[in-house]
Length: 452
Ligand code: SF4
Image (cartoon, rainbow, N blue to C red; front, side, top):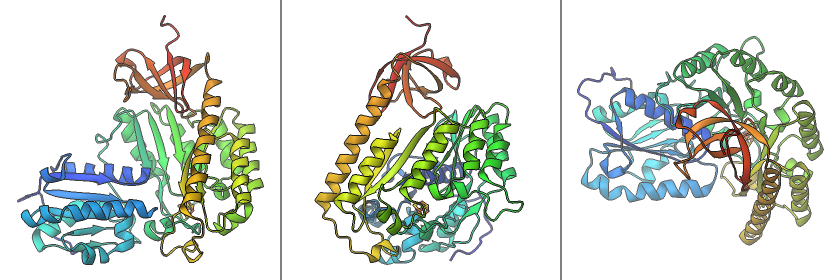
C-alpha cells in the first residue's frame, strides 16, 4: 500500500507521460481526469511510449481480449525498461483492481498498480515510486473518488462527460464490473452541479452524465434524491444546451424518470438501455431482473411519453445454454423495437462471476454467426430508419470539423444521430438546422436550409 509523502512539485523529475486507455466511456473519462491532474503537475502528454518518462495503461476487464492486449503491451515494454529503468510503467483501472499484486509477479517491470478508485492520487503515487522505488500497489475499494477536475482539459470543447456515480450493486451473472468497480457510490447533486457549471462557464454546451448503473443514482445519499432530481437541477443551468445520461438498466429505470425526461427541455430524447437478450430464460440466467415483456412495456411507455425518443441497446450472444430458439427471440426483439443502434458482443466468461461457473458450451463459430446476424440486422434497421430522415430538417449541436472530411462540420441531433454537413466554422458550439439529403446506417448528411 502507499505511504503519504509530503507531496511537492519541487525536484520533480518526471515530465512526460504516455497514456493509453481501453474499454468504456467511464475509463475514457477517468483517463481524461487523470491526465488533467498530471498536466496540472506539469506533465506533458506524448504519443509514443519511448518518448515518455511515465507509461500508463488504463485497463478494461470486461472481456479477456482487452486484458490480453494490455499484457502484450506490457510485455513489449520489458526491453525498454531494461534500457531505461528510471521510466515508470503503471497499470490503472479495472484490470489493476482485479489482478492486483499478481501483475507484479507476472510483469515484474511494472512499477504501479492503481485500482479504479485510486487514480485521483496518481501524482502522489508516482512521486512515491520516484522516492521509494517500484511496486506500489493502490487498490483500496471503498475510496470515494474525489477529483478536482481541470475543466480546461477535455477532448471536445463543447461536450463533456461527467461521472455522477460509480460502481454497481446489480451483479448481472456475466459481469465483472461490480467486482472491479465496487459498490454504488453517488456524488451529491451540489458536487455534480458545481462541476457542470464550471464546464459551462468554460464553453461546454452538452454534458453526458455517466454511471455504470445510472438509474440507481442517489442510492445512499441523504434526502432520497433520484436521477430525476439531478436532471431537474442541471436543466436550470444557464448556457447548458443539452443533457444526456448513460447507462440505463431496465430493471432500475422508473416510469417516473421517463415522465421527468419528457418535461425537461434540455434532456435529450435518447436512451441507452441494454436489453442483452430477447429470451426470458437467458435473462433469468443473466440475473438481469426483468422479462422481455417488461422491457417491451418500458419502451412503449417511453415512446408514449417522449414520441421521438431513440433507443440504443446492447446484446450478448452465445451466453451459456443459448439455444437457436433463444437467439430467434433476440432477433424478434430487435426487429420489433427497431433500435437506433446496438452494441453486440460475443459472450466471454470472466473468472469470478456467476456465469463463469456455467459451461461455456457454444462453439465460437456459433457465437460468431449469431453476432454477425445481429450486426447485419441492426445495420439494415438503422439504414431504413435513417432513410426516413431524408428531406427532413434536424437540429444539430455542432461539435466542430468532421473527422472523415475536415472541410465539413459534424454534430449530433438530440436523438444522437451523427450529422455531417457543409457550413461555416463559426457554427462550432452552436445549434444549427440541417436538411438531410443522404444517409448511411451510421450518419446523416445534409446542408443548411439556406445553402443552395
Ligand atoms: S448493471 Fe449488470 S451489466 Fe451493468 S455494470 Fe452492473 S452488473 Fe454489469
